[in-house]
Amino acid sequence: MMDPKLFKAYDIRGLAPEQIDEDFAYRVGQAVVKFTKAKTVVVGKDMRDTTPKLFAALAKGVMSQGADVIDVGMVTTPMFYYAVADYELHDAGVMVTASHNPSEYNGFKMVFGDAMPIGGETGMMDIRDLAVAGPYPAVKEGTMVTTSIQEAYVAKLLSLVDTAKLRNLKVVADTANGMEGIVIADILDRIVSMSWEGLFLDLDGRFPNHEANPLKEETLDALKARIRETGADLGVAFDGDADRVGLVDENGGNVRGDIILALLAPIVLAKDPGKPVLYTVNCSMVAKEEIEKAGGRAIMGRVGHGLIKPQMRKDGAIFAGELSSHFFFRDLANAECPDLVMLMVFELMTVTGKKLSELVGPLQRYHHSGEINSKVADKDAVMARLQEAFAPKASAVITIDGLRMDFFDPAHPEEDWWWSVRASNTEPLLRLNLEAKKKEKMEAMRDELLKIIRG
Image (tube, rainbow, N blue to C red; front, top):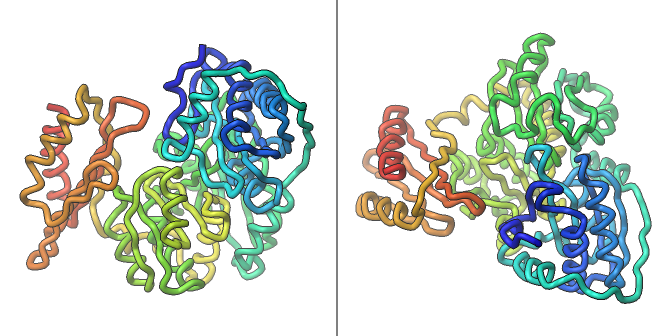
């Protein structure tokens, strides 16, 4: 019996094979074709132990409804997006992956033929209903062909940065036994000035060394240790399906996602002046400031790739980023590309001659709480209490994604602060982010908000 709750805002994810098995995958394959009317579906896959059987069943479901399957093999999620959008193989696409989730999970990311996500507001629930109502009788059987897109992807990537001008940098890359291990050497070995070494490059869906989630600080311990041992200039870390990247400077300091956004926005805007750049409601004030300082138009948006990508297209944004270290590029179908983020950081270090810590230091001028999760019984009641307590004093109340309130006083700018509280799409959690120009202010207001949230 299919559990409809596994169809989430951005993807399908659950325990495999307990919740997501071959019958589930077969029905999803049928439902994708029925919903999109696709004649051709690009299918990619990650390295998890349950993936081969799910891939085979998914492909069988697609072909049972008369659509052809183009199997692009084991790929990173950004490589999959490239295959769908830029490699002219597309009507729709499905990636078999559970992203950064632990090894016992698996799932599916689905996109239309232009790599726009199929999410909660763009068809996910239609596919859910179709899948639950299935399975359906087979019609004319589709075919399957297999192709590799890695060479084309790497060539596209390297065309966007002048790697011949990069100075000699010593880099440590931790792919966490995830999918980035399939492509990282192909990228970095082509940069003649690069000296690099990899950690946990072997593909292993059990993630035997550490969880493939660079947002969790403990997953960066091995990377930081190796940076210290080798005197490397920086470290890069990837999640399981390689659509997120974490940066660690030469001193072992983490670089938050919104700081990376602020760091790279001027580079993107230098090539395309005056254009919009999107940041999310939980990003630092520094993101907006640096976008505008570089002559761009800063637009605040909602969190989540299924919401960011359509807004980028709507607003004509050339670049977007979020606190969770997803970064999106107009020139790559508005899709995530951590590989390009990595190369742009190399380029910036070359052009400026500065260490990574020197580049990000001036951007870390405010005090951010980090994301704090709280389990609550009644999310709506908590949000109402927050509204009552803070709205009368706020200079702005923003409701595009949960609640964000700004407290900016032109007469006393040194006291500026803001908070954002969003409900999780998948768990009974509220997510708090807060920032202030003064550390004491951040800590005091954080504690006051948590007292209300946690009762």
